[in-house]
Length: 247
Ligand SMILES: Nc1ncnc2c1ncn2[C@@H]1O[C@H](COP(=O)(O)OP(=O)(O)OP(=O)(O)O)[C@@H](O)[C@H]1O
Figure 1: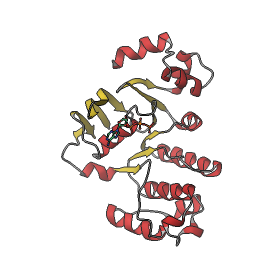
Figure 2 (figure 1 turned 180 degrees about the vertical axis):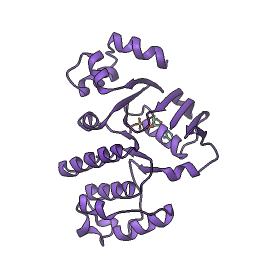
Figure 3 (figure 1 turned 30 degrees about the vertical axis):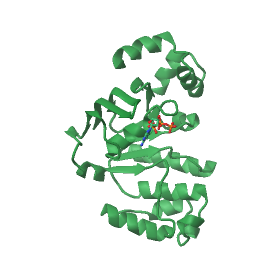
Figure 4 (figure 1 turned 60 degrees about the vertical axis):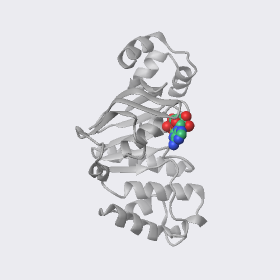
């Protein structure tokens, strides 16, 4: 459904994506991981048309996305930092986003799930960080599109909201949606990801299941496994199996 082919992107002399190839698994929850600055947000922004790659192609439903915008209607996106007009109330913001997207949205169940009713008439600038994030989540999930992209979705949320968010993401996957998310919170990745896509030095270094990473890394949990890859302590079987495919 989503394919990145030989994608290159530099910001001035900073080579961020280096001939990156990636096929996102349809109908699964995929976690895009990698050290700070490894290009996770950049590949998401390239897919959304917010950043233009220098070369290479992105296919959505087998069609190149360059110079098109219609495919964007099929993607619900939660940005890492959402910037909404601060003087609008949540209810006004929901209406505004519904008008912009020109899609029928369903916000009621999400308002209830994240207990947002008491805040509906408050202006965005008066909301706490976590409540803002709940609003961002609501604005992402209220539409019913086949692809959901979440950049650090749990940021600022309390444990109750995180549990509800995880349930929500699982439900959407069970409804057949393709979900791509980034997070530095390994417990979230552990609970959510069907597949891990690990970026390093501008390429996909590993793509596979959590079980595969644990099996090959010989570490007790995902946090240790990922930390060992980031710090260069790369287990040989993992290196052999995956580097050959992606370098
Ligand atoms: N608009 C931009 N102009 C210049 N450099 C940029 C721009 N956007 C990203 N970069 C650089 O590209 C690199 C990759 O950034 P990106 O935000 O994709 O990383 P990330 O993997 O999402 O990082 P993090 O885990 O810290 O969120 C970084 O070195 C960043 O400074």
